[in-house]
Length: 256
Image (cartoon, rainbow, N blue to C red):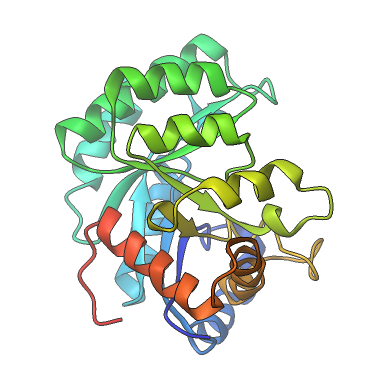
């Protein structure tokens, strides 16, 4: 398999501190043609930009994740400078997460909405994180109608239908390979091919048969194989389609 584009990764994570260069060398020799490294706060967004400067095949997204959400306009003002960097292709990852109590929900919604507005003002797609917050996420997406992707999707077919109707893409990762992944499999079966992106969310969400180990983009082939079985198409055809979708959404021009 080749022409694999990982639409969501976190190679700035401390889990790669000991062997980041070696891991990426392995990844790029395994058929991976591109990676979008996503920020979760201002510091990790800057790290993502630095990775994109170091590696030709890495692009960056900048944003404030709900776990880092604070009612602090200075953080959001930093985005004005960060998006000027050449290989910044999206605002992300941003969104809502009600699973943990890291941030007040009202503050999360405020920070999310500000970034949706910012993305629309600058004609940039968004990379959306939504965990146990479907209703509020959909409400804000319907209000602002951004272009973008809901990443690491594990929701219902009904939610997938609403997202697709809004023109959004759906990112599928290792969760679709998990033993009890009924909802992701059903949703994957529904989502049209021209709306699917492949991702790892590495170093997390490692697909079967390596679940529990540190994830990286070379494992994306296992997710692709599972989705190709669900969609009943050739795995390389699926990969090529997902890569084309990624290039289109993020306006990436490259020789892949």
